[in-house]
Amino acid sequence: DGLADNHFAVYAVEDIHVARLFSIKYIGLSHDSRFRIYYRDDQAYVEKYKTEVDWQAIGYLYALPSDSFEPVDDSQWISTQSIQPISCERVDPLRLKKFIFETSF
Image (cartoon, rainbow, N blue to C red):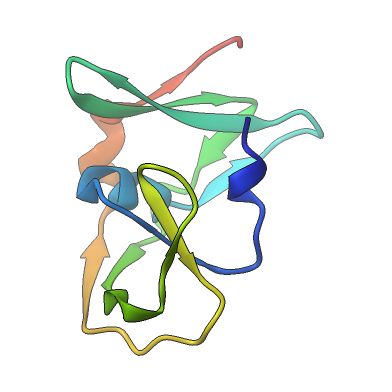
C-alpha cells in the first residue's frame, strides 16, 4: 500500500540489490510519475512510469549499524535518528540499467 514508505527517516532494506536500485536518482516527469520495485525469478527490478533516471549521477549505499532501526514490515526498517555510517559504496546507475524498465502501469 506504500504507507510505510512515507516516513521522514533513514530506511534500510535486507536485499542489497534493492538498496542499490533505491540509491539511483529518479526524476518524475509529471504529477503522476512513479516507480516500483518488483521481483521476477528472485531478482529485483524497477518498473518506472513517466520517470527518468539520471544515468550520470552516482548513488551512494551506506552500511549502517542496526541498533537504532525499527521494523516497518517484513523487509524494511526505519530509524528517525541521525546515524554514522560504517561504510559507503558508490553505485554507478549504468551498471544497473538492465534492471530498470519503462511501463504503462
